[in-house]
Image 1 (cartoon, rainbow, N blue to C red):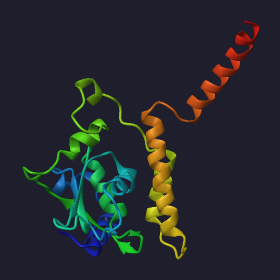
Image 2 (image 1 turned 90 degrees about the horizontal axis):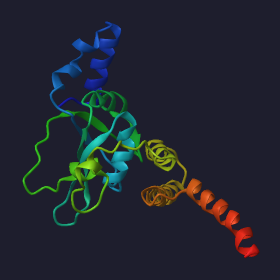
Image 3 (image 1 turned 90 degrees about the vertical axis):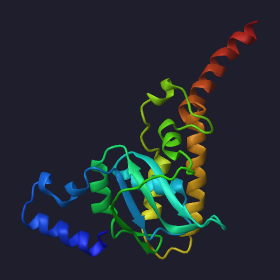
Image 4 (image 1 turned 180 degrees about the horizontal axis):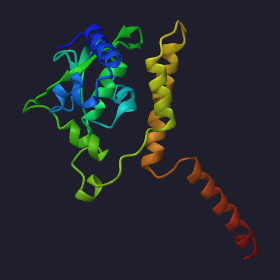
Length: 209
């Protein structure tokens, strides 16, 4: 597995020599849509990882390695993309990035799920909880990132000395959860406005009666 410096050196060498994408070192890993992520902040959840890495493609599976006894993150994991080419972007752009004071190590890898592992890929693809959804649900288009999710990704990615940073991240996570809940329930600001207009339109009619 390549280190951050090795990857940066390979990329610079290819850039200096104008190496075509077809001849890039990334092509050695074209048979796997998985990436390895090391150096993860221990407070990050699977949802946070998806938010950060969805900047470069659609994640279809995430495996955050946790301690078997405590359930706490061990600081590394794996992400699978829908499009294998997204792994190249993630490795090049997020390897060496600082997230909440820790430097990420991102590299191509192959990952084999164990028999006892939960089918997270199915849950992510369907965007549903619990049992598998119907074939119709599987064909639904994947939604773009919400504004709140993009803002959370920026907060997690940027490093600063703001003592309020952890509080801001917690609050933004709440906003993301609320925004997703509104989206799933078919609500949101537009829906609320439509309901208000509808109620105002019905008020004069009921008054005449």
